[in-house]
Length: 185
Image (cartoon, rainbow, N blue to C red; front, side, top):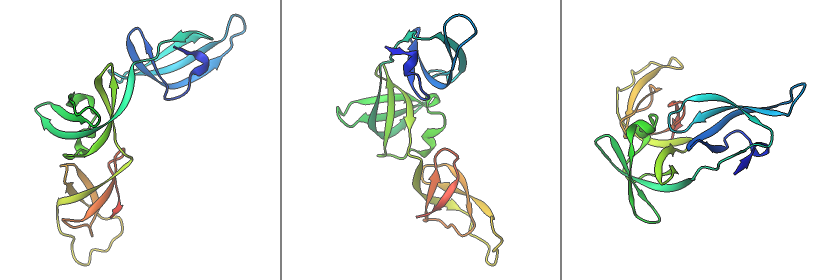
C-alpha cells in the first residue's frame, strides 16, 4: 500500500483494480478541514488522464507490476511475440498497446516490457537506437544548402527525415521519442 506521503511523479498506483501512473500532484491545505492531495492520473490500460483528490494520509493499492527484459521474436497478425529471457516463455502483446513503438523493433532485439498481472502492458525502448538505412534517394551533387532533408526507410520499416548526405547502407542514430535523425554511426 502507498500513502499520499509517498506520491511522486511516475509512481504507479492501483485504484478499483485499475493501474494508474501519477502525472502530477499537489498538496493543498484549505482554510478548514484536513489537507488534500490533488492528482492527475494516467490510466495505464487506456491512456486517459483523470483528476482525482485524496485526503492526506489516505492509502492506495500497489499494482502487481514488473519490468522484464524480453527478446522480440516476430510479428504474428495483430500481435508481437516476445520471449522471456529467464524462463524462455513466449508472450503475445497486442499491437494497439505499443503506441507506435513496434516500428522500432527488429527480430532478436532485447527490450524491457512492463507486465501487469503477468500480461504485457507497455514497451520501454532506449532513448536512441542505431538502425541501417535500407532505402533512400541519392543526394543531388552540389546541393549544399544546410538543413535539406529527404525521406529514408530504415531496416525496421520506419520512415524518417535524414540529411541529403545519408546513403543506403549507412547506420543512423534515431531518437525513439521524437522519431528524429540524431547522426550517423
